[in-house]
Length: 79
Image 1 (tube, rainbow, N blue to C red):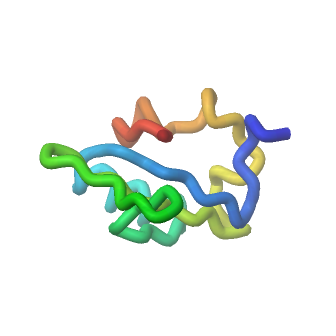
Image 2: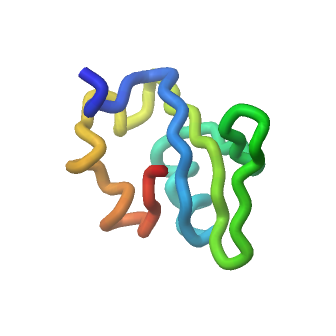
């Protein structure tokens, strides 16, 4: 069950800013620009790292992460 995207999931994504914005528009996800793991803020100088909250109406809901368009279509990595 943990391999499938569910509504309300929070994904930590790394990718190019323009691709992440396109992902946000097409998946209806809410992006939080300062991704954190516990008290640690994740940063990178050459790519963006964001939290993406998956809403119930997202086309990602029910998909396996490995089969989702995140890598191929948006060039984003799930951390």
